Image 1 (cartoon, rainbow, N blue to C red):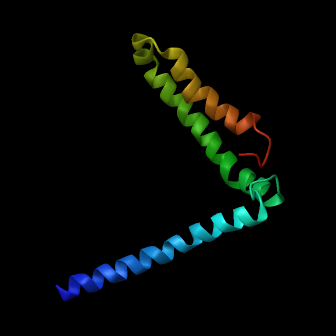
Image 2 (tube, rainbow, N blue to C red):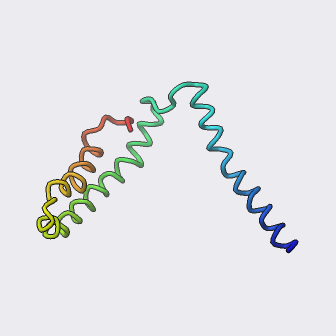
Image 3 (cartoon, helix red, strand yellow):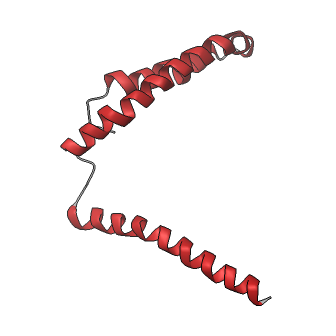
Length: 101
């Protein structure tokens, strides 16, 4: 029983330590205004991380739409599937200004 209590306390302590950065970033955003404006950091993060993931999502969505289109046609929702699987990822990747999320 003592061993279980010891592990529970350690688990709660470690979990609490992992949550500290979440609270400090929320406080910093309140204190210094919106931190998601179009700065160099957000543009670089968008260019290096988000855009390649958007390209991958567009390609995977296109493949999935091609595979699921017979079922979507039978269900009568091929336009909705086209919008969700192909248009929205492509618009997010290629139409959005750099650094705006």
